[in-house]
Structures are given as structure tokens and as C-alpha cells.
Amino acid sequence: MLKEKSVILKRVILLLCLLLAVIPSVFADNSTKNSPLINLADGNQTEPLLFDPNLTCRDFFLEIDANAPDYFQYHDCQIQDEGQTWPITVIYKVDGKYAKQAHQYLIKTMGMGDLKYLCCYWEQQNPVMIVNPKDNLLYEVSFSSGETLKRDWDETTFYLTITGFRKYDI
Image (cartoon, rainbow, N blue to C red; front, side, top):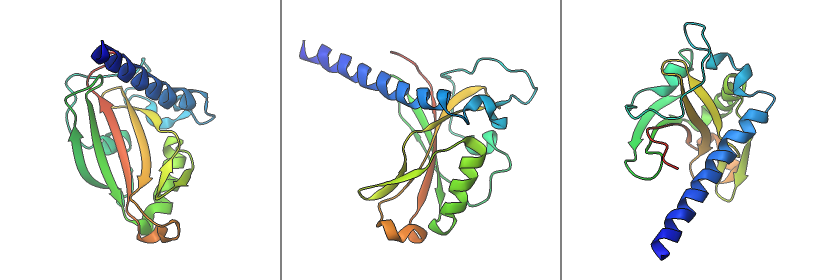
């Protein structure tokens, strides 16, 4: 009984997180509907996929934006083979000296929101949902810093994370 309640609670929390991630970008002025990055290469617009069971580690950012600046450096790919969505997260590092430029670029190209300083790091309040034109899959994109003092922005490493899902079991 306790285990069943735990599973139900986890599912409710995951569903709420997904809703909180998707709803703000749907209602935002710069939602994915207006973004030039979401158009498929052949010009046909179809409903994006929510998951792809065959998704693998690769350079998602380059696929989404072939003109991305060099200060977004591919760092790592993390695969999680558990839970309800089985995410693959590709992480890009940005040196602090380029963080302001990187953030402005993400605002302009992906409709990313402002960064807020919370306790010990900079964080975007809501992730952006964007469609990769290569596979028509919906990805979650966020930008944040490592642990830092508020005044040490230029010395802080920032991270762009792009997450795709291989499963949708809710």
C-alpha cells in the first residue's frame, strides 16, 4: 500500500513538472509557434513527438541551431534508464566570460527567460520547450550556472542542458 502511494505520488509530481514546463512556453509571447527554429527542414509542419524510444546521445544543440556560437561547448551526455520518461540530457558548458552573450543568444533564438539568482546559483525559472527539426521531437532546454557567489558571474561556469525523452509512461 505504501509502495503504491509512493508510485502514485511520483507520477503526480512528474506530471506537474511536465505541465509546468510546457504551459508557460505555450502562453509566452515568444512561444515555439513563432520561433524560426521549430520549422522542419522540408517546410512541412507536423505535430512534434513527445518521445522517441530510439533516441541516442548526440549534439542536440547543433541539430536545433547549426549557427550556434562556439562558446557553447559540448560537455556530456547523460542517459537515465529509469522512471517514466527515460531522459537523455546533453550538457553544454559556457565559460562565465561568455555567459551574458550566451544568455542573450538563447533569449533571441529560443525565447529563453531571465535568469534568477537563487541561494547559490543562477537559474532560468522555466525551461523552454523546442522542436528539433532533425527528428521533430520536443526537447526541454534550460540554462543555469554552477554554484557561485552572485558577484562572480564572469568566473562562473554556466550550463545549457537539452533533454529529450525516450519514454512517456504516465
